[in-house]
Amino acid sequence: MPELLASFHRRQPDVVISLVEDTAATLARRVYDGGLDIAFTSLTDEPVASMRTRELHSERIVAALPPGNPLARHRRLPLTALSERSLIAPPEGSGVRRQLDHVLARAGVRAHVAFAASEPDVLAALAGKGLGMAMVPESALRGHDQVVGVEVDGLPREQLGILWRDGGVAAPAARAFVEHTAEVVTRGGTG
Image 1 (cartoon, one colour):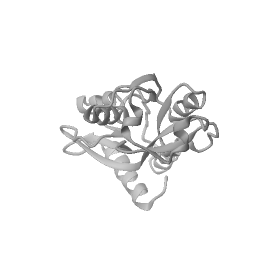
Image 2 (cartoon, rainbow, N blue to C red; image 1 turned 45 degrees about the vertical axis):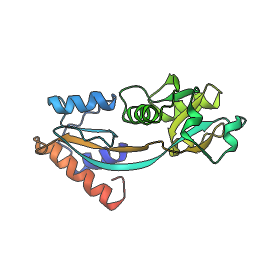
Image 3 (cartoon, one colour; image 1 turned 135 degrees about the horizontal axis):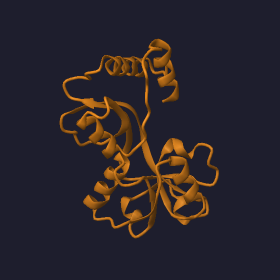
C-alpha cells in the first residue's frame, strides 16, 4: 500500500491523502455514512449494501503453530481440529474474523479466541511463543522461523480490496485514486 499511495501522490501531487486504520466493519460504515470516500479493507463473500468492491489481493489463511506442536506435523487439518483450542485471530469486526466465526459456527466447531491482534506478524509471533494456534494469511509466515503453516479445510481466504459507495465515487480525487488503483492492479504492480 505505501508504494500505491506514493505512486498516486507522484501523479496527483496536489491531492491531500489521509490514511485511517480501523476494522473492516468500521471502515465500511464510515464509507457508507460519507465520512470516507473509499477504504482499503478486508472483503467478505457477503455483499455490502449500497457499496461496490474490487478485490486487489487474495490468499489462503493457514494455522500457524510452533514446529514442536503435534499438529504442526500435518500438511492439512480438518476444521474440527480447531475445536476447543485456543485460537489467535484478528479482532472482531475484521473481515477475516467475521468469515472465520461464520465458518466455525456453520460447522459447529467451538473454538476459543484467546488473543486477537490486527497485525498478522503479531498473530504469528504469539503462536511462535506457544500461546495458541494463529489464523494468518500464508504470507505472514515469511520470516517467522518459530512457526510453520498448516492448511485447514474450510478456512476462508483473506480477500483485500477497495470499497466505495454504489453510484460511483463522488470526489474527483477519490475517483482518480480508484482508477489509479485499478490500473496498477491490472498491470500487476504496486505503482
